[in-house]
Image 1 (cartoon, each protein chain N blue to C red):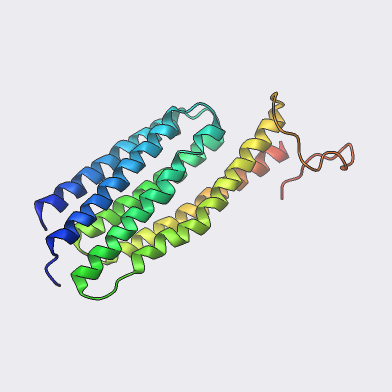
Image 2 (image 1 turned 120 degrees about the vertical axis):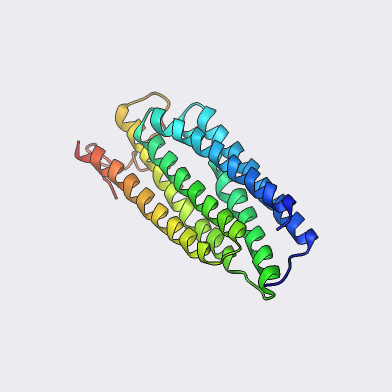
Length: 125
Length: 92
């Protein structure tokens, strides 16, 4: 366990505060925007900037604290970069599908509608 | 730990708490099911961030594994709920 110099603590504090502010901004947008598709955008700030800032702060702090290169906190945002788009895409498909099912106006038609047979109700994958 | 880092961590955790309350309001109020699923996903994520910041506060590496597990289970549960909404509507 090394003593952590002050400038490292300052950088870590800055990254943590930035992450907190971005998470609040994302949650505020998620709370206030009207409509599901609009609401999906602000949490991207939380998912990217929030997690990267915290992971960089953790990597820097533990590297200095233990006196060796500790890059394992960076695994989390890399893993999230794979999983979050999957979840988001799936939920967007859900919202679009339910919107079509409800027959709302201004819903984009399915791309395969022209050549599909008339009974071509979209099946779940 | 200097007072600067201590207060920064306290501020960050406070920010996460405020954000979690906002997301919780959306979870309770969300007009449709996909809003609630997305809010649950976001809550999972914020809990994971809280665990990571707590790990920095306690200067312990163990919290990292907890955060990784929370991220993994959050992904699995959100994907599962999204699939459930999709197929439940089709069966209807």
